[in-house]
Amino acid sequence: MATRFEVTHEAGQFLFVLRGADNSVLLRGLPGDSKIMVQNEILHLRRALGDPTRVVAHGDGSAHFGVIKDNDGSVLAKSPHLTTREALDELLATVRKVAVAAPTIDLAKRARAG
Image (cartoon, rainbow, N blue to C red; front, side):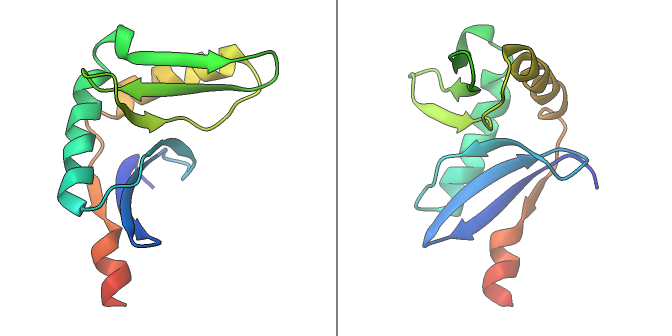
């Protein structure tokens, strides 16, 4: 499958997931009350990825993850936890490369229809 943003509806809230071509989770957005709000956060995320100061790595010796922040400092998305800083840097480089052109798939609509 192609790299894509998936908008889903879980436990009464909407959220987005950026999936890689191998279906792995590259980033996960925070839950929101509306689909439009979550779709807007995808747009903000694409813009934030162009500014290295808004992509923040966190971690200690055994667990590393990245956070993408909006221009007001609020969190837009988080990466999965990885075991090394090198793996995190590689993941974030991949995210910067693929997120710009990744299509958005509305799975929330399908979940409620089925």
